[in-house]
Image (cartoon, rainbow, N blue to C red; front, side, top):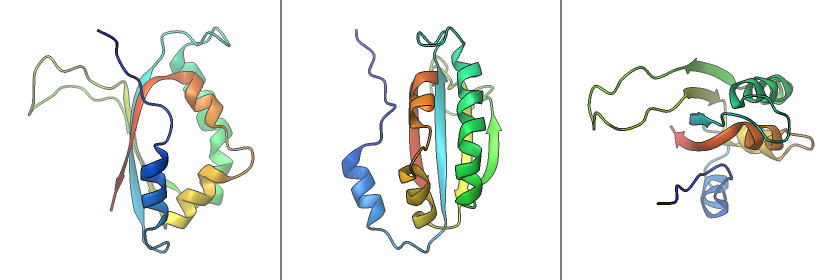
Length: 127
């Protein structure tokens, strides 16, 4: 059975997101599953993601993003016991949808570093 991985933004969902009121705060849930080894660099996915976060930090700061939580899930209290946990969960608050969109569309934003580090991911918009 082939496992599907998701690391690219769904363009239909991005279009719907971009039509939301641009002045409303938004929290993004990032569910992250790291590669064991990044073929391009020989680093682990965890090490590569740290490099992405370092490169992305100026963009986060310019977007007035606030990292609310970065941590490792420990156990499932409600749900299937055999379900695999994500490697990390990252919660980021943006003051507006416009700030988030400006950040991900900014010239030089290091999406490629995120893609290199991750085997799979989810990006979930919350209000």
